[in-house]
Length: 169
Image (cartoon, rainbow, N blue to C red):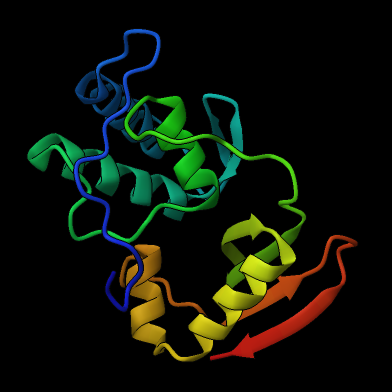
């Protein structure tokens, strides 16, 4: 583990005969198609909705990295909808856990929602504590943001949609 999160080495998933390299190629093609046809709207891939342009660019980076090296070496552990898309394309192993993901950490650039991560209350509080120790640049890098975007604040939302904690950067 490093300060930017877990480094994933050689994750491979063979489900229903899906080759992870083919899954990565298909993902890359789908993401690039969505990026070309999408301007400032959220999109859906393999049933995973609310994917922002930043999410698509992050998925593109994961797919390109996997195709070049056969792993996600050097990248942070995918979370939330990014992880779900990678699993649905068969690029990484794991199980999508729906239960107890009722708390959400949301990352904003001004009034624009960049991405979010949902999990249990304990995991979200642990992540908020970790984020408080990081610089803005480290958070941006971990989220895979391009230079045009920067996290300006992060907030923790409880299962009832109420704001519980805010980090202003």
